[in-house]
Amino acid sequence: MREIRLMVIIRLEDIKRQKVMVLSKGIGAAGEELNAARDALIQALGRQSAFWGLGKTAGEMYAALYLSPGPVPLEEVARLLRVTKGNVSIAIRQLERLGMVRRTWQKGDRRVYFEAETDFWQIAHNVLAQRQKPEFDFSFKLVDESRRFAEVAPSSPEREFALRRLAALQEFYGVLDGLVRAALSLTPAQLKGVAETALTLLNGGLTGNGTKGADRP
Image 1 (cartoon, rainbow, N blue to C red):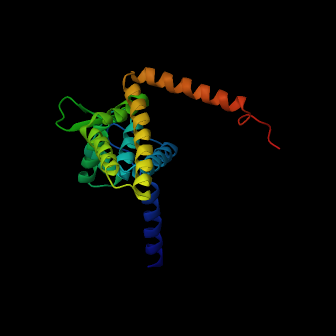
Image 2 (cartoon, rainbow, N blue to C red):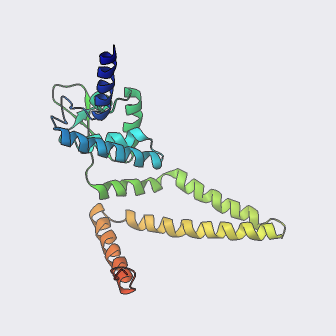
Image 3 (cartoon, one colour):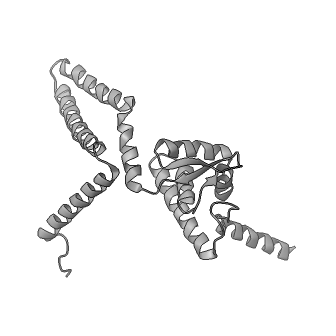
């Protein structure tokens, strides 16, 4: 009995370590080291996507597809991540909306396959393009309406406080919206170039001010 219990524990630990499985298509055979690399990326992107409100499964799916050399059907991704097909379907719709994955088809196979978008600047451009949705304009209008209500309120310290806070929020929204609009006027390649130039200028300024590259005591 003790030996059986020990075998069960070992098997459970083995399953836990082997969360990243070899898929029959798309991902292909991989050694223990590549499985470990894939598992680490799945965990990393799962945590990041959960932090940003997309849910852990979306990030895990993108990681699995990103390290796949070819398109993978949805059911195989579900089996890889050990989640239900329903959860995978929800996550894949989120990824498609952001342009992080795309659908493909295989001749003679009725299943829908997916592959990851590997151009991260294209993904960034797609995410910024969400600003074009009506919900953003509506939220900006509501902030403007909030300030108008505050402006016609009777004079009081509370009114002045609210106006200062709302003015600061409007200023921030205006600058941020201007940056997004400017970024959307660029191609993904141009966006990458602008970001790299800005980073170079910022790093140069930091170095010039002695805040970077200074000798440590």
